[in-house]
Image 1 (tube, rainbow, N blue to C red):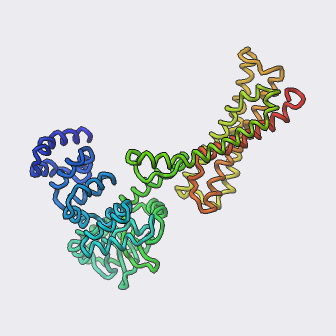
Image 2 (image 1 turned 90 degrees about the vertical axis):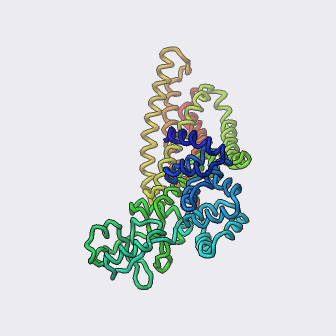
Image 3 (image 1 turned 45 degrees about the horizontal axis):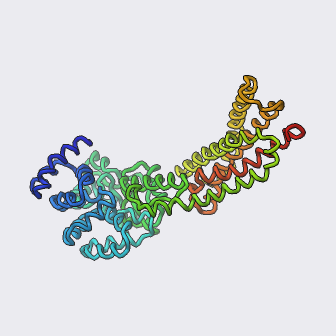
Length: 462
């Protein structure tokens, strides 16, 4: 595909240089909207505007929706007011709403004034729903039929009114009041005899989205329903729109990106990495870094508290990085598993006791494995003369073994329980980032390590 785009770009170069819109249009005529969007994304702003002007109005609106936000804003600044109005009036409702959401209010209000009365009313209605709600994702263009209709009447209705529908894969059945009572796949109408009643194709089982529900819940419902589109209803069950899978894919990608960024120890970015200003990037990253830095100060304080033990048994300091990193790693693993399971609705707050028991056993087993490796390492190094762990090397090995069991088990338990606590208090579990868990385990792990050392090595090294 990249090679095809390069060939198209080389073909377009002379036409763009000569400002020949007819030749540009002819070159792009064999491509679909997604391919044209990729070509435009690889060109300069001036060339992009020239190519965009050459497109038919309806195709231009489709292509515009496939451009990145920065490319869209550049085009809006380059095009004339009339051209911008034409694009916005032709855009799909959900794509236009997504664009308006990202723009400053003053710019959105100016663009709203360019819409015709019908499109402006729809845009204002969709923007009136809460941010990150299903209402912001839906489009009011769909096919609705009555249960008393025949298949023949339904197909005729689709031919007359289907052009503006967002999707023709699903047909929605409403009663005389406009309340949703079922959804039927288009294939059922295509395969049924023409005289069949719509009611005969119904099974009275359907999945719908609440207009004020969260987009995150919509992603989960799409995953369960496995349908290309889901109907949107209000609090009383009236059908008011549909959400299609392409919009949900965008939401799922955005949520996954935010979770990954939060888990990495930074605030979620509002724009792609390459489009985020440096000052914004620093601000998003500095907050958590400062918090984690202050947390690590507690680690230094803990080390200072045990300075006498370290002075008398210097060998203990050699294993601090090994011990602490193992606890942090196990905690990060557990947090990753639990946060992802929560995102996929595999776990709920009520499952905390099941998870705790499971992670205690996991932490114990992993601690024994790592502890055994630590004992073998100390024994081999001591026997081969690679390092002298003092005459009490066996007790040092036992200290490392028990410490790894305790710290790994504590890290696993902390990493798995923190997401439940955050969810319980209404926060995003992804906030329990890997660095946060690691910092917590660093501080507490030192206490566990030196406490075990003080018990095992009392009367010998300590």
